Structures are given as C-alpha cells and as structure tokens.
Image (cartoon, rainbow, N blue to C red; front, side):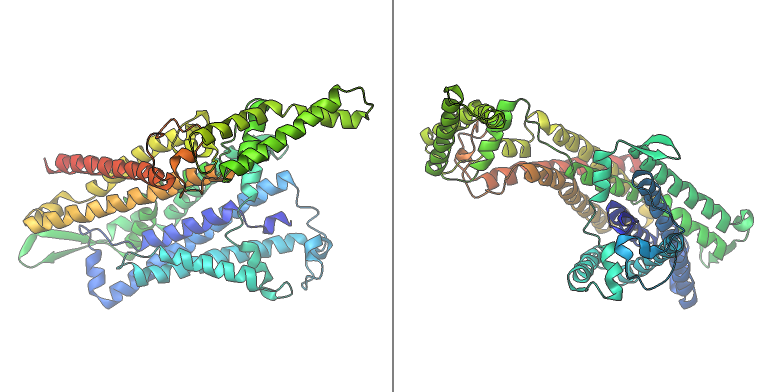
Length: 514
C-alpha cells in the first residue's frame, strides 16, 4: 500500500502520454481537409475545441486507469496490498489519517483521484498548448510542471492536507527501475510472468481499450451524414463536410494514426530512459576490480599527490604481507582481513605504474581512462553506444520520411510548387524540423549514454588536457582539452544525423514529385 503511493516511472510515462495527447490534438490541421471552414466560423471553432477537449479527457482517464491498474498488479504480486477490508489507519504511513475508511475504499478513491489528476494535467497542457502552439514552444510547459512539483516537494509540511501531492512527485521514479533490476518475474495469479511482459501487455491493453472506445463513440452510419460544400467558381474544389460524429471519430483516429511521428518520439524517450539505467561497469577479475578502485580514488588528483597516495597504499599492503608471512599469532578474522588486503597488491601496482607513466609524460593530473573511452564509444562495455548510433540513424530516417512525405500532392503542387519562394519556404521549414529532431535525438540518446557513464566514472574534468587521461592512445598526440574532443566527437555525430535526415528527406520529396 505504501509503495503504491510512491511516484515512479509510471508517473513520467503517464504524464508524457497525456502531454503528447494534448499536443497532438492541437497540432495544425492538414490543408487538404475541410476543418479550415470550422475555424472560419466562431461556432465551428468552439465546437472543434469542445470535441478536442472531450476526446482528450476521455483518453486521459483511460491512460490513468491502465497505468495505475498495471502498477497495482505488479506491486500486489511483489509485496502484496494487505487485507483491504481493515481500516486504512492500520497501515504505518496512514496512522492519523482522518477518514475512517477501509483499504479497499481508499484504493478506489485513490484511483478516482489519479483519474482526476490525469484530466487536470491534460487541461493544463491543453490550455498552454493553445496559448503557445503558434510560437512552437509548447514544450516549455514541462519546465513549469517540474517547477511546481519541486515547489510542492520542498514547501509542503507533513501535516498539510496537500501532503499527498508530494506522493505524485515526478522526479522520484526509481521504483520501476528497482523492480526491473531485482525481479525478473512477478507472480500474477500464482503464475510466474516476466516483468517486461507485464509492461508490454499493459501497452497492448491501452491501445486495444482506446480502439474499442473509438468504435463505441463512433456509430457505423456516421459516414453517411456528410454534406457537400462547393465554392463558386472553384468547381474542382469540393469537400465532404463531415458531421459532428465524423469529426469526433477523426480526432480519435488522429491520436493513433498521426503522421507526426509521436510513436517514434515515445520509442526514443523509452530508449533514452533505459540507456540511462545501463550499468557500464564490468570489472572482470579481482585485479582489474582493485585497479579500477584505486584509479577512481586518485581521479582528479595532481601527479605528485597521486604518486604519494599510491606509495602509501603499497607500503600498507607490504606491511600486511609481512605480518601474514611472519610467525606472529593472529585471530582467524584478522588473518582473513590480511589475506583480502594482500590481494589488492597487483591492482595497486598497476595503478602505480599508470601514475609513473603519466609522470613521465609530464601530465598535470591523473584521470582514469575508462570513463572517457566509454564516452567515445570504445571498449567492450560500449555496446549500447553502437546501438545508439544505429537506432538514431534509423529514427532520423523515419522522421525525415514523415516530415517530407506528409504533404498532399495536389496541395503541394497548387500552393508551393507554383512559386519558387513557396518551394524554398517549404524546404527551409522541413530542414529546421530535421535539425530540431537531430538535437532532440542527441539529447535523449547520446545524453542518456553520457549520464549512464558519468554515474559510474567521473568525466566532469573537461577543462584538463587529454594527456592527463591514462592510456590515451587515441588523440594522444593532440594537446587539447577533453571538453573540446568530446564536443567535436558528438558534434560530428550531430552533423551526421542532420546530413542523413536531409538526404532521406530530399529522396522522399523527389519520389513524390515524380
């Protein structure tokens, strides 16, 4: 019960989907449709906005139900929810809880509360997107939400009735990572089921439930209620003006069959999240483990300080070795401690040799090479980096195909290709989208990799020269700062993504214009 109220990755995913829901429902409509006539009339604009808001609230409720239903299923299998018939005050964290209700009643009320929270956040996203969609800065609302969450977390007292708001804090999302790391299977109705399978089934359930809801909201005969509108003097332009039910179905279908690449966006965010949680440490044998330990301890120290530190370590190990080889009588526990200490000798000797090598190279400081090599995609543990390179190339190609292939041929030929400036304006707008998406991929995927590496190995000494890195065979000749090398390395990857997106986009436009 207590873990149910702890915020985790489900919160991040749920609010992300709600934000995408609001953003996609309010993106500009395609020129080929007739919705421009709704915007031309005040009543049409009001009805269109009402339909979008109603569909969004409906989907926000479904998203909340599915996400927290799966969370209850997983937590009940791992920890159990206790006897739901007893009073909620019997649980530790609910002592002093004012309402005299049972645990089951609290869960029902809490579920309704989370549905309302989802609808509330959708309403906020909906309003802010309406205000900022023309400036294309709707994503700034996320910063405001995180600011409010941080304010709630640090300023709400424990005896305040707003204390429960601290339990939906978006920043604490470690529970799901621990579940996936520690429990390969969960017990669902006395059947062992893999945790990843539960999450996949949850996504499938979400899609199926949303599709079924669309069929329930849209009658079969709705397509027969259209009205034909013909503009005088433009007999070649005829649109079938849909009824209100058709418009409702269009908005429901648009959320799932949108040509803006929102599913790819979710895939990139999920991939970035799992990459940020990768454990890149793989020490191997005991000697490598202790070598890594001592190199991390002297990380950032000057060469004289590191040399003195390692000399003291080796002197201490030699004293342990002398005591162990002497005829003195020690307890069994102390002897085991000495044996463990002596095993560190090879790792310490290797680290000391690296310090002497850096002293010979006249380096200023000592930096452990593994973190920087992983940041550059080198080493056996850098398999995820090569996956990022392949995945980002595929993602930018798919997005370029979506961006350059969504225009209707008739509208493009009439409105854009009729003038030279119109065609150039179209190409410039698409190039800006490719550049923005490439930067987003760099931040989501490559940024997650840098975060994953920095969690285990410190790579923040970017103002030091590259010769401070131990074993710097790569770029060893270049006497420049580490930050410049990393910036150039990832800058080349960014340029490669932009170039690939431009090439795929131009090929797509050329095929459509044939």
